[in-house]
Amino acid sequence: MARGVDTARSGRRAGRRVRQQARQDQLKHLRDYWWAYLGLIVGLGTATIGAVFFITEPFTRGFWIGTMGTASVGVILHLNVTLSGASSRASGGAGERYTSEELRKLDQARWCVFDHVAFADFDIDHVLVGPGVVFAVETKWRTRAPDHKSLREFAKQAQRSADRLRRFLSTKDVSRNVTPLVVLWGPEHGKVVPPEGKEVDEILVVGGAHHATWRDVLVEQTSRFEVDFASIQAITDYVTAHDTYLAEQKK
Image (cartoon, rainbow, N blue to C red; front, side):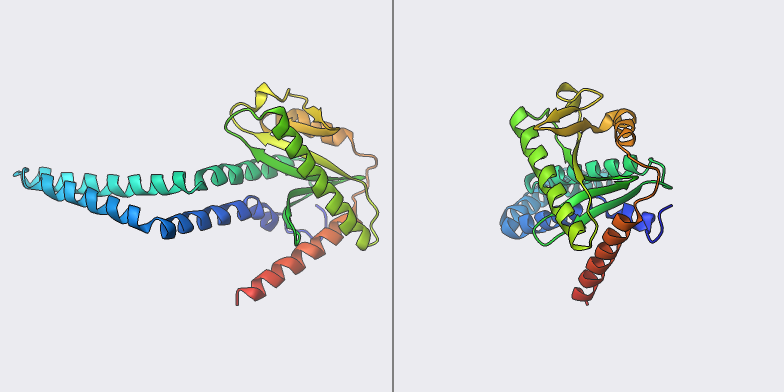
């Protein structure tokens, strides 16, 4: 395993930003529409209490109250998750975790994975460093098959991430070509991405479920056996410093 890298800790980073944003969206929706949630609670409570007057059997009455209370909580949570957009964000976070898990199946003696590498203006979902190759990987989850315009936007974002990472490495006197990669997850991605992947504006887009195929494609792009310690150390130092800064800001 590459030195200086806590892979377990890095793996827990996958999807973290998306999950945090989903929680923020839920809280914001509650604050913005508290009156609607309050009205729903009052309405469900009134219906529950009203029905109790017509139920004379104690066990049935208790069962009704418990069932309605549980159902009411479920309805409110479902509405909050759906209407706030947190459900879509949560799916995106799941996609990032799936990609991270698949990347970590590569030989850890030669490959190193970093999840959620954040810069001032944006973040890179995953950085993959292998023998002679560096990838900036963007993960996308879509419930429906994305159209070509969406695929081009995904590819553009991956290229922007690759360019940003290449500039960062150059500031550390590490000159590397960084290859952009898009990993697409969702029930219909097979309609637009074949098992071997497809190029969109000269950028490879692969389907997450075809992981065995596209992992082989990544391995084929290695140019030498030696582990790229220079790139790994530069990114490790940056991620560690960034995490330390965020931890100090929370104190």
